[in-house]
Image (cartoon, rainbow, N blue to C red; front, side):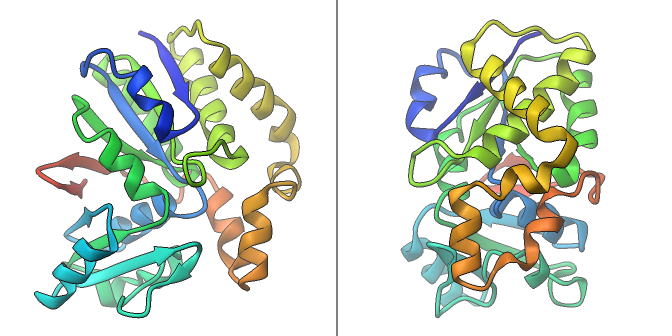
Length: 234
């Protein structure tokens, strides 16, 4: 099996030469981490939508809605894009509609993949086992920022690729080599490495840095969200 990394949703069409693979969508700060947290806390499912208009339509029908643009919670939404918003007492057993600046756009871009999963440091061990057990090629799709490269998603790609390679996967792309090099450099102190990123500055400017440590902590959620029939479940 092979592992590859796509640095941006804008590049994904160049990877999608078939649909017989696992796509792992990753948006570390914060969408995929938040989705894992909501499902861990008992949400029945998450319905990811690409646009604000779709989210508002669901809200009008009475759904709980998480919505964020440019790190800020949308004024009509019940929740923003922090893993701490989705406490068990408010999401357990509920369907949650979710839209974000980057993460849900990446899901939309890869929605025709044979298997589409959600990845974060919070579920990296469960995700590694899932991929190995499925015996399929893996593409890590980094949500990035407005279709541009970012460090944190690529860093996760390197971390996941390293684990998969240890379990028998191979790679042949420059993208994986770059991500592995980044992960090797960052691994001794991931938090310090992340401090150089653009997105940390965005979060700090909006007083939203409280979730950074959580988003970088491995294995707080032993689950793998799977996208099927327009929703994510475990």
